[in-house]
Length: 200
Image (cartoon, helix red, strand yellow):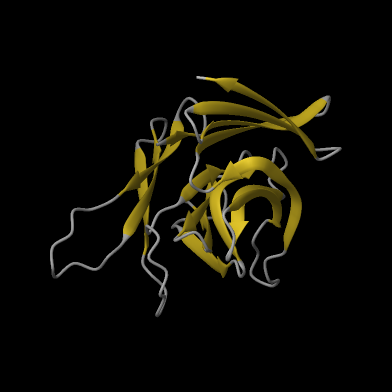
């Protein structure tokens, strides 16, 4: 579950499967203010040998009733939910990220770019990437920003984006090999991570 503000949020629902069910994951937007619930079902697109889970990551937009979802580490969706202005039903835009596996994703404060953590398809090393906000006309552009030293997709890690004018940085807390933890602080202007390793 992800809370957009005090009255709105998103939930990921994985229905219990039977042998006759279509494999899907539902993204639900709920509002305590309007008492509304809207749902979009994500269903695998075509033939795909990828065995990653159908749901990978979600991040909400700040100024719109929308969110970005990563499915099976390479399918990127922008989901727009109904609002009081111009939409009366949910819509979805689907793009494929080639050559990368996306594991974590965040939307910047202006809702114009995505920051993602993932790997190249043939690598286990975690890198920070910048992805343009998906739109109907253009292919998705991916820009590699920096590789995080000593961090791989085998490690457990969480991320937090601090996006204010005076200080734009990403914090990464990771549990790494040997039961140690690592704290990475990535200054987005200089893109140089500083890391602190301590014994757990």
